[in-house]
Image (cartoon, helix red, strand yellow):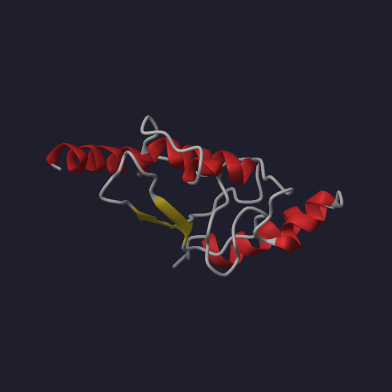
Length: 134
């Protein structure tokens, strides 16, 4: 138990240094995630969801649930919290519109309306994820 707790604290410190994806509609946004780490970690994956609203085909707009294989059936104990964060950042930069949790977002990309998708994603990033000034 002590070893898994030590691993968690080490991983938590590493995760805090991660930055969001540049050159995406999410650039400049600060996105909060909720991690629920099971007692059996690292043998079982953490549950992760967005607390910050995000317009993305693989994130449920209301619940923040993330459709990502490593959080489900492709989990390996070799993955760390930092690698989960990196996978989420990669997913933000490269959405998978064929397995959408947000159908509006997925439909825009599947229909080829990249400009419409990026416009909506930027708008929600400005509204929900940009640090407040003042």
